[in-house]
Image (tube, rainbow, N blue to C red; front, side, top):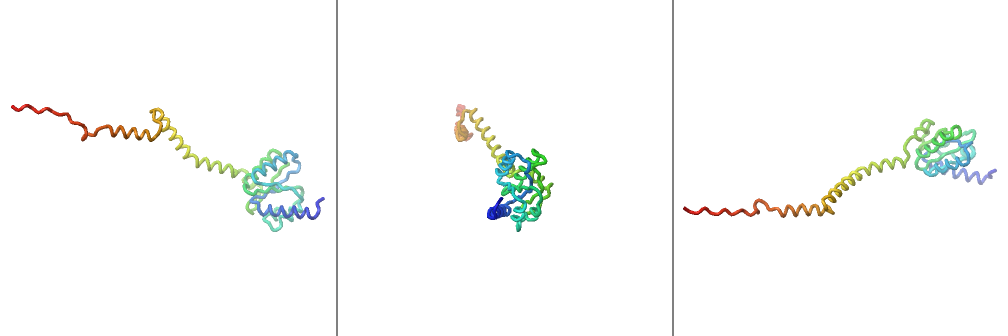
Length: 200
């Protein structure tokens, strides 16, 4: 049995979390085994999220004055709230995956994204979006594509230089310049002397 001070602490901490969260998802974990619940909490925590389970009355009081007030008012039965502080899609993805693995136990019931109410269908669509890390990986690969192409060209030049027995690009240029300098121009080329014809 929680005393008044403990309840007030839970309410204050939860209100702060609700105010700071970018995504808020209403779900239910009742019936999930201890190990599975720990794994789900860890998955959400790894993407900078948090799962809170407490009494509906405390959810209701903590939500008052926040964007989650309507969603968390008048709850009946057991509930849990998942909070996303950075990557809302990644947290939704964790919950959707858990729902597939534990059908009928982990249920998504709706959510909020940046203060806007989401239907269950919209939460599912959000869960299907690439996570922040996945999008960054795609962006990085796009940025790296020209660099990779340049690296392939440079490698090809190096291989040709090695085939010619030249160690550096500078040496290739120097050899080319030396060859050109060594070849006499038409003006500089010595002319063969033609003996004068004897006078008659």
